[in-house]
Length: 319
Image (cartoon, rainbow, N blue to C red; front, side, top):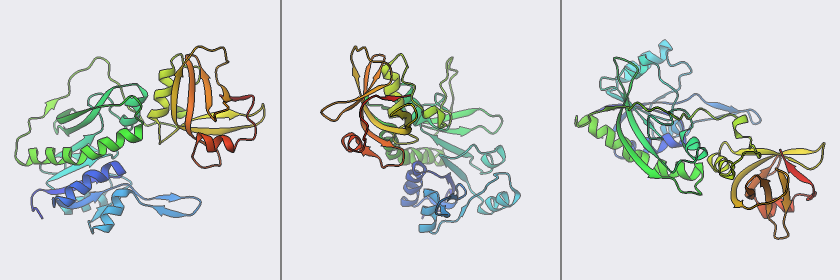
């Protein structure tokens, strides 16, 4: 194992895990891991570990799970590790006291082309907003003030039918090599970080709420509806209310669709099921045809199986 530098890895998600594995497999000196506290399944009353914690347990890597990143006990334990550098991938914002702790500083990997799409959900928002390009950026936090300094960026094209899940998988596969490239550049003192450029119109990537996932079928553009559905697939998932009658409705999650541009005279949100087992929903510029969905209380299904489970097939609306 390489003795230098001593690394503390900070992350929690499946996205983080790819970079952690790359560092570990290539025998970098990971002296500790910081990850999120355990969650609980309310129904089963079982603990749910982060993917990063599971990896730490499987590979005997010390870890901390602070609730408060300024807690004195946590800071004392971090000091014992005495890291040379910290690498952050998919974690909450670190306070300055933690960020500035290592001798060589800390760097972060972010899944967008900074300064655009800062925030918790860049992969979702680039697709929701109809972008055709995104990528990865590594960046430093400058100790003297709160400005970010980029180190490396890597661009990729977004396919026209790509979902957030598919794009995330592409970026995950690139993330490990990007982290290693940045780390090696720091070790060899070959990085000259550049200030993020001033951009007149910044686009942000805030955390997505349940309400953000509700589909607005009266959007003027079919493209906007289509992009929203694929930008939220498979998680956190676009949804609507499917009405069978005035008093009966269920929540309907929609994962995969195709768009059909076509003039029609149906009211917005009218649902009709064709003889060839297609479910189409009318919008202003045509129809959204469902490929995969999930009716509340049932499993995720392809559209043929989903239609087979619907008893009422006439006078359906979404809202």
